Image 1 (cartoon, rainbow, N blue to C red):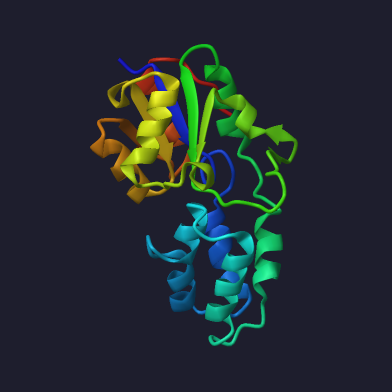
Image 2 (cartoon, rainbow, N blue to C red):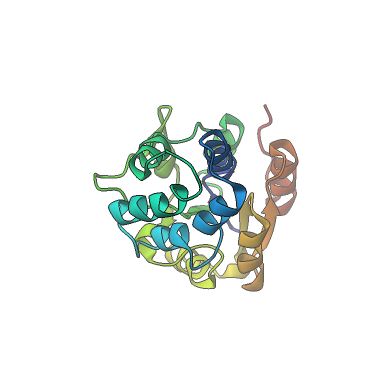
Length: 209
């Protein structure tokens, strides 16, 4: 029986940072192959940043090392300022999380990055982190999706077995890591379809927009 729901944040509860990064790079003349070298590999600069193996200043420098030879004039600091502005919430999914409070255990897993200042928790006035009992951040845990350990940490902190939890993410690769542990998974391609799948998995009627 499922008694826990664990959500990705970026791309599920907020608009996708992945799509935004692609648009940013294309707007600033960064070729796709250069973007992939920065953001794609599991051992690449962005993945290391998400595990706090690089500081913000170090990542900004590495970003420029890749972008400048590719012909882009954008600075690493400019990218960081843009990224830390955040991404707007998806009200439909926020409403679902609010509805589930007190009915199942609620957690979130996010691949995020460290900041020099205290991290901003609010996106357009919505205190997303405060909706959950547990939030596992890659920048704090030192592991990132799809590494199995990050899902284990979330389940352990919620006091549930992986088989008792459903995990929602917009990235198929991130679902594989959860599924390997026995978690039920839902790919969030379309918000309404994902809400329907979650409703069926939990057996709890959920609000629709």
